[in-house]
Amino acid sequence: MYFMKWVLFIHGDSDGVVSGALAKAYLDSRGYSVEVVFTHPVGLLGDLKGFIRDSDGVFIADIALNELYIDEILKFLRDLGESRNIIYIDHHPLPEGVYIPEKITWIHNTCCSASELVFKYFNSLGLDQEYSRVALYGAIGDYLDETSWVKQELGRWDKRAVYLEAGILIQGLEGSRRDHNFKRKVVEHLSKNLLPSTMSELVEKSLKQSIEDENLRLWVKQNVCKYGRIAYVLNPPGSVGRAANYAKIYGNTLIGIAIEEKKEGLYVMSLRADLPIDLNKILRKLSRELGINGGGHPQAAGARTSKDMFNVFLERLDKEVHTFI
Image 1 (spheres, one colour):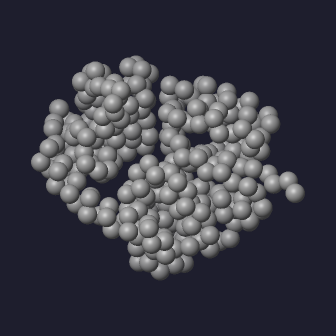
Image 2 (cartoon, one colour):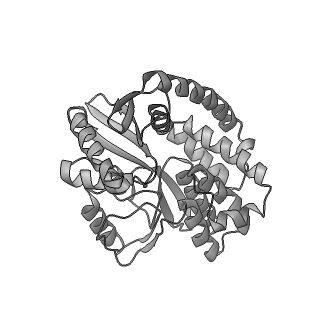
Image 3 (cartoon, helix red, strand yellow):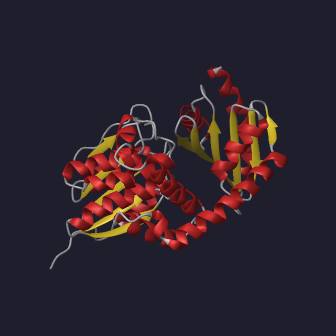
């Protein structure tokens, strides 16, 4: 018997994992074979080329389009759409002037989480309404739990229980870092609409992560540095996303940055900002002007630059802040 194969390209955070689980739940119910690949904006093009092989369908969710490679990515997807089914669902702001490739299913809206968009799409095709609970975990994990749909669906469940389960998932995934094999197990678990709290290893990781987060908070408080309206920390002992937020808080600045230094002299950064700052607009502009990688959401984004370019990056970033205040 022939089984159509789908490859899912998803982000490794709770919103991405939930999006993958929802897609897998639907595809499994239709008898398709499913492979899960974890990727990110900078690595998407290379992963697409490396993993599509004998696939018949490609699903991409919660992966922003990279400013530097956008033309090549869209051309690749357009050509791929000639021979494969392609679904691209995302909620990150799009670069200016982007065109939508023909012959692929393209769903984009900054209104909400990728999980909400993915659930609505597959629910319209027949995915059981009970999976709204799984989608809620992803929305909560991406701080997008104030939409009208989320509020409506929370009323269908015990709100306190949903937030407990979401917390276990969020913390457990954060504690898994780049353990993609474990994250695939989580995708499988959620695709069966099983509670995160019934996955013992996930619970253990979440409890350990909570302790690490508290230690991280105290570390950032003692080690935060400031440059103009920006606060930053280098090589925090934990989540860079949370460290960036703590840096913003304890530095009493509009932007917080946490930097992870790689061996090859690369700085991988997570950034957090307060309104009215739009990190996505700033970073996409700096990507074009400085040749760095950067983008994401208005108040939560990521960037990559060489260690040698960091001071220039800081200076330019601080100047851009002034255009918003």
